[in-house]
Length: 219
Image (cartoon, rainbow, N blue to C red; front, side):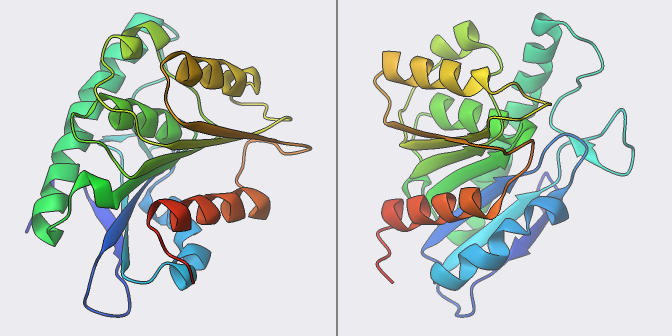
């Protein structure tokens, strides 16, 4: 089966697939970058498929990488429109994955870093069928007023941010927490001291604990 996005897939050792984690890279990255998260996670998540797609466009400032939406023009309306276009493609990709591997949203967790986190939040809250969960690292809500009008489901969410993040300001974590709580969405947040715009071991461990909980894995 051909998918609408090129993706790196890390399949479980056995043939059986019970769950899937879709990992979305940051601005200028690719599926191989974000796939490093699965190295530790997969040891503790049996029968779990990891899917790491490339964004739909080559990155405007790094042609070797990809982007989910263009950031070369600093205009909220433009960025929102581009993000919504990418959201449609990503949702189509997820439907293709569900068909290929016989999965439902309840068995899928969306996770992403930076721009990938932003897309995970958008897709996670605007899909009619509730996902198992959303994990976001160093991201934000792209357009709160736009997303507020499109909420169709409320998956449990974990958002992690570094208090020294120089790319996406840490205040975005606090604003996202407020947004989720106002919309009565189960939200857990963690501000990591001394952490910049990256995913340290502590953040990865918190993500793994969250995944084991939503997938009901006790090992």
